[in-house]
Amino acid sequence: MSSLKAVRGTRDLLPPDTQLWNRVEATARAVFARYGFGEIRTPIFEVTELFARGVGEETDIVSKEMFTWEDRARAASEKAQSLTLRPENTAGVVRAYIEHKLGDTGQLQKLFYIGPQFRRERPQRGRYRQFWQIGCEVLGPQSSGAESPIRDAEILEMLASLLDELGVKGWRLEVNSVGSATDRPRYLAALREALAPVKDRMCEDNRRRAETNPLRVLDSKAPEDQDLINALPKIADYLDEASRDHFAQVLAALDACGVAYHVNPRLVRGLDYYTRTTFEFTVPDGSGLGTQNALLGGGRYDGLSEMLGGPRAPGIGFAIGEDRLILTLEAQAGEATVAKLDAYIAPMGLGQNAAALVLARDLRRAGLSVEIGDGSFRLKKSFDAADKIARHMVILGEDEITSNSATIKTFATGQQQKVAIADLQKILHS
Ligand code: AMP
Image (cartoon, rainbow, N blue to C red; front, side, top):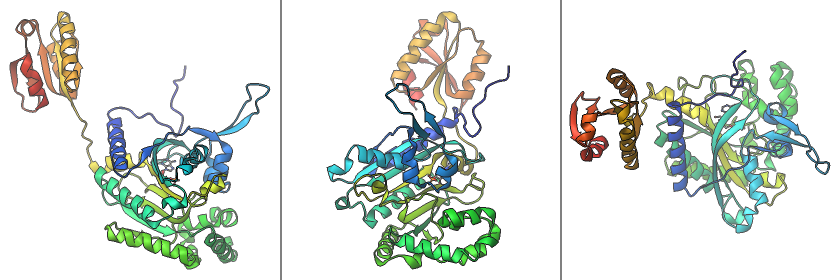
């Protein structure tokens, strides 16, 4: 029989690698708490229409990357419906904001999520079909200050602090403004006009994008098209005064708190709902991501709630690609250091197994991390097993048990001593 494997583009995360995942998530939670965020958990599948309306029919995600299925009706009274594994989490969060009338509180909502997302992309290093995102959304009625440039700057400053706290080296922040709902159509018209005479000289992908979603041409990395793309109109020249002023205030606040950034006029991002500020954090080549150097992305989405049938609720958010963050940290750290357990208890004979379990229970209750061998193991086998996973080995023989003591070996120093059980905790904690 052929063996069963994880589906292409999905993967198992195993210990000890999951230690780093846990550290990243714990750090993110701690940082988000300091900025007043609360956790939201939305379902991993939603009605397909949510993404079609929220993310946009013409985006790559919706047009070709979603895992969608027709969910059969179970009862005659029930209609079949089209469902989709979430390809991103912002649309789900805004749906929940509308559904639970969070806007009625009048307060700014600051929400974060950590969870898997699904896109049918061509798998490669840093790009998977199931991947994890850590994201935040800040939204609320206009009176809550949700539209203020200080929100944008606060999010970016928080990300800079988070990446520094995690130890990501050499990150680069790129920002742009893609304008408001009124700026965008004017710019799109100018872009279409400028593309019309040159698009036939572009690669097939860009010819298609020029028709279906011209903004995406700006995202293109196709080397042969770069000169043509750089000569296209810049969105900055089409912003109205309010959008220009908003962007200037975001940048001024970043300057004030010393967050370094680069304005990239071509940064438009692939999702339709973005308005005004958009941004991306990248890491330098050689940081383990290959060609996928975008660590995280986000932006403002002032019209999204209304696109989904909700009240006016300007907002801004981001999603960190957690898989990519982990690859970066692993590559930048060099050799991974795996945290060892405090102790490995080696019972010398089956008769000592129960006493070993009692000792392990007491040490674990005192907050120590402990593994237990088995009385059937020879001493050499116990030493080898303990040396791999623990800082100390605690030997429990008949002698030790009758004298209420234990022999402890410390691997870092090679020292071995017999100590009273009562002193064991202090030594293991040190
Ligand atoms: P997006 O939701 O497309 O704005 O993406 C936000 C971030 O999620 C990106 O910057 C990537 O780090 C990450 N990401 C997006 N798609 C994938 C994928 N297929 N595999 C791994 N990470 C991804």
